[in-house]
Length: 342
Image (tube, rainbow, N blue to C red; front, side, top):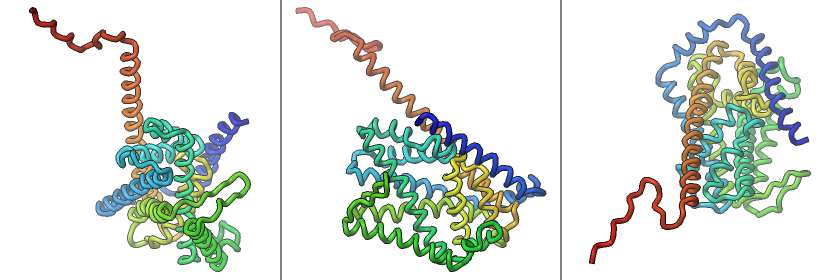
């Protein structure tokens, strides 16, 4: 049964790509590549630089996710550089390949077990990083819907009227903030673990909880900032609207298990930007894919190859040292000088 699930989720992801791609094609009919290229050309160099800075902020916050989880585990002997490279590689691969196919657990397992962590510790680390992301999404969605309850009205013709109602949106936003407040109270007051069927939530120490509430919003704000700075100033709906649209589209892309959220992200984000020219929206999303997904993906492949090469070289040296009898010099070493004559 487990093997069946391993194939089912990738199939669902590819099906999501096909369906959303077809719907996106219908949404963008009449839009030419020349229009998109013109939109990319008109993005100012300063805005490209700000989008790049937003990317760096997002990946720095993602590295903090791992560091927070290590603090929760009481592990402090692993350097920031190693943690940052591991986190960067994990998310660069999983964002592109798809969470269901390559969740990042394998990369973290290979990296952190080389530093002495057990499989159980790596499992806790992966779970806490995932929860930190979810907590940040709930927190920011609560803030956005409370501040901008008309957000879902931008897709009023695509969702039920109840969801597009500003009062409903604000109530939902306040509910999200209440969930975060409960989590904060549980950490401060040392509540018992929350159990929902097979889901167990053990409240972390306050120093871990506070870091989560800072790191997760920073990562999401940085990622949304890439799109925000790539949109034209004249028709830009404002950062809160862009952030809300990003949270909805990026979350849907992750849930769909589509590799890289391809098609799903674009479909929802374009729908939530009815007052922005579609060519400009697609151009901004292309900048996001380039900075946040494709360039990190290429760099992550290099990091993985270098890491595995170093591990293989270390394993080979260890094997060779075990195979050489005691007293026999290793290949390439000079023999000791003969003793002096009496």
